[in-house]
Amino acid sequence: MTITIHRGTDQIGGCVTEYEHEGWRLFVDYGEQLQSAQKSKPLQIERLTHGDLSKSALLITHYHGDHIGHITELPKSLPIYMSKVGREIQQLASKHLSSVVEKQKQMAERLKSVNTFSPGVEFSFGPFTIMPIVADHSAFDASAFKITADNVSVFHTGDFRTHGFRSKTLPNVIKKYIGQVNYVVCEGTNIARPEATSQSEHELQRQFEAAFREHKNNIVYLSSTNIDRLFALYHAASRVGRPFIVSCYQKRIMDIVIGRDPIWGKSQMYKYSEEYEPLVLQYNEDGEFRMANKFQYLLEQKGCVLIASANERFNHLIERLSGEKQKYLSMWKGYVNEDCDAYNPKLADSLGKDYLYMHTSGHCDMKSLGELFPLLQPSGIIPIHTDKPDDFVKIFDKDWPVVRLHDGETFAIKKG
Image (cartoon, rainbow, N blue to C red; front, side, top):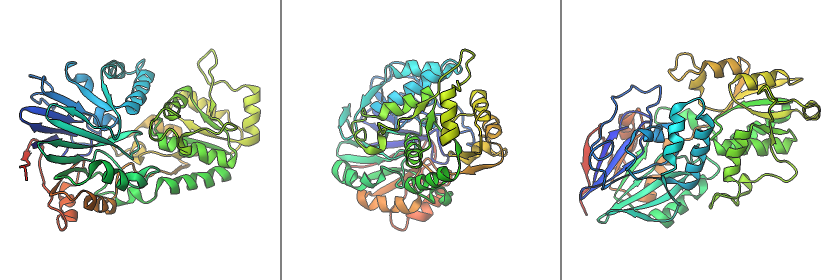
C-alpha cells in the first residue's frame, strides 16, 4: 500500500489523502482550504479529479466544509461514501442555504448520489477493506477509518477529540473494531493551540448553566450543525427553567439525531423532555419573527435561551426582548477578530462588545493523542491537518517513529 498526502501536511483544512494498492485508489476528504490558510493551487489529481475513475472512490470523514466542500467539482461517476446521519445533516444544511448560495444548491444535488455507511460495519472497495468508527468531533457522526489492503492497515483519524460528551467510548471502540495497525495518519490541529481544549464539553455546559441562571435573556451564537453544543445548551436551559428558542431550521437539525441515529439516538443527551421541548420561532407575513402576546408574556416572565444567527431577522427579535440581555460567542474566536482572514463583520456587529466567549475545541489535545497511540501500536505516525508538523515530530518522535511528509510525497508501506 502507498500513501500520498496531496494536501494537508502543513496546513489545517483542505486535506486530501490517497491510499493506493494494485492500481486501486481510495481517497479521504476533498474540502475547501480554510480562509486563514495559505492557498494552494486547485488540485489536479489523476484518478480523482480526472482520468480513469473505474478503480477510485472517495471517503468523507465529516460534513465540515474543509473536508467535504469541493466534492461538487468532482466527476459524477466517482463513488463517494459518508456516514448516513452526517449526509442527512449536510443535505438539510445545503438545502437551507441553497436559495442564497449556488454552491450549496450544487452540494444538495451531489449528496443525493453519495453512498452511506454505518459505524462498526465493515465494507469493501476493490482490494480495500474499510472499517468506519464514530469519532467525537464538533461535527456529529464524524468518522475515523481503519483501511486495510493485503494485510497492511492504516488508521485514519479524521478530526476528533477526547474531551466531548461521547469521547469515553473511544478506547473500547478501538479495541473492538480497530486493534493494532501498521500506521496512523493523524490530525494535529491543536499542536500550537494547547489552550483550545482547556475544558471539556461537560465543564462548558456547567458554565452555561450557571450563566443562564444568572442572566434573564441569553443569546448564544454558534454553528447550527454543532449538534452536541445545541443539545448541551438545551439541557442547561431546561435545568434553570429558561425557554429554549430555536429557528425552524435549527429544530430540524436537532430532530435528525432524535431517535434516528443508530448509536446515540437512545441517549438521554439527544432527547427532548416532554414538558420542555424547544420553542420554534414563527414568521410574520413580512418575514420577521412573530412576537405574539402569549409568547412575549412567557419571555417577560421566564427569560430565554435563544440560539441566534447573525442576520437582521434575529437582530430585530433581540431588540424586542425586554429586560437584561447577555450575548455569548460559542464558536472559534477568529470569526470576530478583524486581523483574521475569517473575520465575519455581521457576526461581530450582532455580538457587539459586551459578550462572553464560551467555547471549547472540536479537536484533540496532545496529551490525549499520546494516549491514543499505545492503543494502536503503530510502526509509524504520519501527521496531517496541522500547521505545525515539525512540532508534531518533536513531541512524539521520542516514543513513536513519525513520518514527516510534504504535500505530494508518497510513502510506501511494505508488508511485514
